[in-house]
View 1: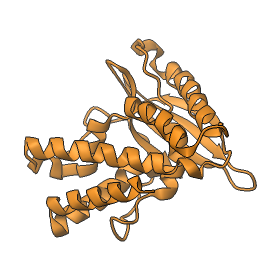
View 2 (view 1 turned 30 degrees about the vertical axis):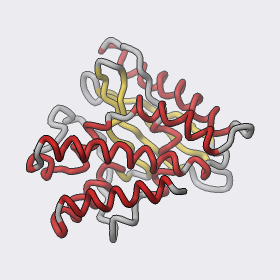
View 3 (view 1 turned 90 degrees about the vertical axis):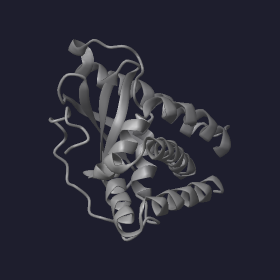
View 4 (view 1 turned 180 degrees about the horizontal axis):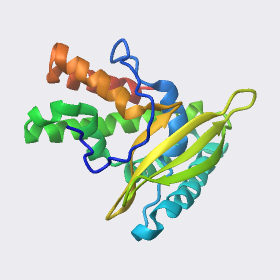
Length: 226
């Protein structure tokens, strides 16, 4: 059963295969997605305005994130500090945590679910913030926005890099009581949530849930030391 039963009109993206180990997180995707994952809007919108407002809101917050990234007067630590609350406000971390565990979520206790959600949220924030120093002046172009049903939308963007082909980035948004929240991002037609789900499921199947938690804690500590 899908963890997003109400998201039937999802993006028709290519599903990524498994990575070789939990150490191989989608770093390239993280470097690019930091430009758009912070780009969701947190104002109340009526359903009739949802699709058009998703793109407008995206543009507003992409510009806000890029302004932080481009500021040469700020240190990497300062940029991380300013981007962190944006990430916290824009991620639907609870929904993303459930989705990354797939069918394993149903077998966990309430305490295990809460512990994993806290750890996954801290890990993914650390992963994005760790890549701030990799920003090298990329530009963002905006494409189409599409409705995925009432309260859901996706917006196409492209990351333009000098001398290289643009990288297509699409992110999927859900409208909640607090505004638009990101529940997945695709980079080069690869779903970041699918990446994590493939890795996490394999670790749980082969070594158990405690091993996944230990690996995530270790990876978070490694990112924090960077």
